[in-house]
Length: 253
Ligand SMILES: NC(=O)c1ccc[n+]([C@@H]2O[C@H](COP(=O)([O-])OP(=O)(O)OC[C@H]3O[C@@H](n4cnc5c(N)ncnc54)[C@H](O)[C@@H]3O)[C@@H](O)[C@H]2O)c1
Image 1 (cartoon, rainbow, N blue to C red):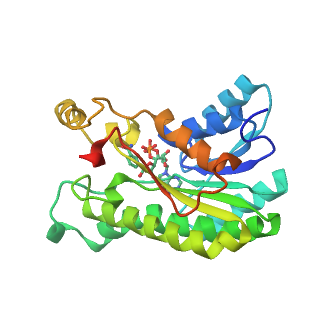
Image 2: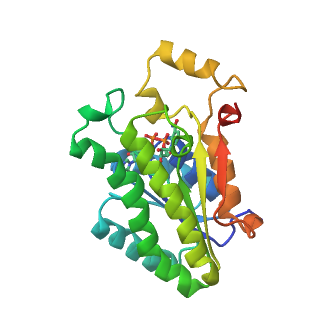
């Protein structure tokens, strides 16, 4: 029996990187998955390949903009009509926003861009999904934050602030929702080799960043997907309001 047997999960930003591997892993562990992303075609190809591997059609792919409340309503409506409930929400979709400039150079739009996706997107997801989790009598919400929520110097200022917001929101939600048996935790990746990271660095910078990681390697999407799986499953039934750092030892220095 899989670790997520009979569970229904929404995973955002699932067309690439960590979200894609989480969709694969969750399906392998028995969950029905609503995988969502802005990138419809890439997502459709992933969904087809997961369902083919598992010999079923328990993963569906839906176009979604997490920063839009209407888009969230459509996703949740579809999830309920297809699977009847929602047990797990992985707020994974994220963007890094503009980096490499000084605070006084940021425009208001550049400040708001990562906030709209990384923080407001997570808020809208929780707001839309929680009524169904309350009805269900349980739930697990996992907000993908970053080590950038804990220390400076890892990205643009708006990105740090957006991840700080989602981390603080996680703790407030954990307290508010504990009486409904809804757990809310955050995961804090260090550097993970996904399109987000690859698009932001050249070879030289990648080598330099790798040299700063005590384990001497960069994270792979599955390194984040396994802790997310733990939080999604009932194995973590005593965990809420927690922060799981997955960074090869970087913040331990
Ligand atoms: N890669 C890293 O080094 C790293 C480090 C720390 C935290 N993170 C966080 O991990 C999460 C996953 O990132 P990743 O590295 O897999 O990045 P990625 O760029 O590979 O994947 C992110 C996905 O989110 C989707 N997305 C972006 N905006 C969206 C929106 N408005 N609505 C719906 N989908 C949207 C993208 O299309 C993409 O498929 C993000 O929240 C990111 O901030 C990544």
